[in-house]
Amino acid sequence: MKNARRYCYGPFQSRRLGLSLGIDILPRSKVCTYNCVYCEIGHTKPDYLVSPEYRVQDPPSSTFQKELKSRFEYTTTLNSITFGYNGEPTLNENIIDFLEIAKEERDKIDWRHGEPKLTLFTNSSTLYSKKIRDRVKNFDLILAKLDAGNDDDFKRINCPHKDVPSLETIIDSLVKLKEEMPKENKLAIQCLICDSYKEDFISNNNDRNISDLAHAFKKIKPNLIQVYSIARMPANYFVFSIDDERKSEIVSIFRGIINDDKIEIKYY
Image 1: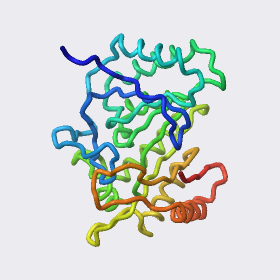
Image 2 (image 1 turned 90 degrees about the vertical axis):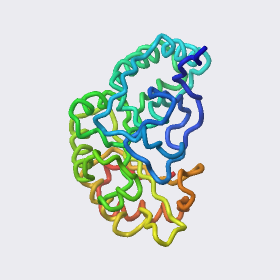
Image 3 (image 1 turned 30 degrees about the vertical axis):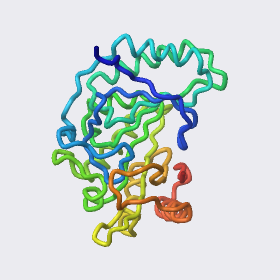
């Protein structure tokens, strides 16, 4: 007998989102367009490193709604209902169906401290597609990844599938997304910076990349930039977390180059 499909994880305390209920809409094996050197859920297996044009055909079953009802029955203080965790969620062709069910169930609850945000983690690789942007802009909060400001650092750190577009295209896609989103919804850029033990592996914690990232953020104009680092075992042994002092330095560099008080910049 096959195990029942499981969608919901937690809730658990997130350093960036508060009390978060995780929603996984991908198959049990990680499916992603990247194979990031620092990934905290492990390497993307070769057969599951996919093109941004790849689509998972997996609509929500009745189990999804039942799991949400069960969690909400005992959890009325959530900060976020968060789509992500096991790869790139925008690859699921039915992401809007999941979002609508989550919104419907969320809106039935009398939340103690205000209703939780419907949040999406995305690695930004699929956002060049207008169809994808039209889907994701419906989330209350989009956490879009951007760890590199140039193609050299991008390829070393994120190890994208060969069909993933250039970093310039990804940055332009984020600009378009921010312009197309409803004003009440928010775009945050999540920027993971790490270091390396290997002399022959240049991490994204280098002066050129930090400067390039700042100029990219200035162009995108997100509501929030989140600088963070590795918190669990990474996919590759040779990368490790930067400390809070370095995070603070990076935030200062970003602020100096971006020079926009409307953009909140924080480290975690």
